[in-house]
Length: 248
Image: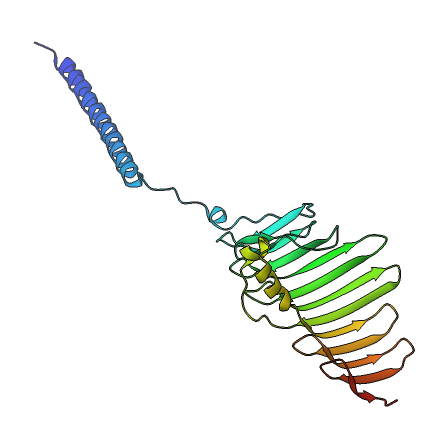
């Protein structure tokens, strides 16, 4: 039979083993809960796209001190160009087509477009040591015709500047027929190119305001010539003078 001291030591060892066993069980239980929660979180997040940080979800903004490019297109979310800036004057977008221009060589420019992509105006600049042109225009809608234009020119004889208002279009044209040189459609467009009002300063220093009729014929001419002499002329539809100030 074991001595009382031996029994006490045995009881203490059993008690220690029981406490260690309880701590081990708690650790194992905690690990089990952690694994369960991790699995649930994975199931909840499955198939979802991680949210982006606030700075990534906003539109990207870049800052430059200087940039050199040949052409810049500015378009909206629909990818339709609204502004085009280029070292070479861009072709004219109209009715889904691109139309070649008749412009001086070396002309750079910017065009602005309506929401449907049609050009509705622009700026152009060309020039060399021999001469050049600068233009700013606003166009009518649905027909490739200028409404308002102002420009400057320089050359061997000097410099000039002018402002013009064109007749409004009689109706839309088919740009595909224009590109294919359909004679009827080309003549129809040309017939609508009528300058109604012009204001200008000529290279000889004379200044004039000319008002024309719907056929493009001069009817009222107000001017000051290169000798500083003012005059006003009234003309009939055949170009015959019917009135003048000062009178001859």
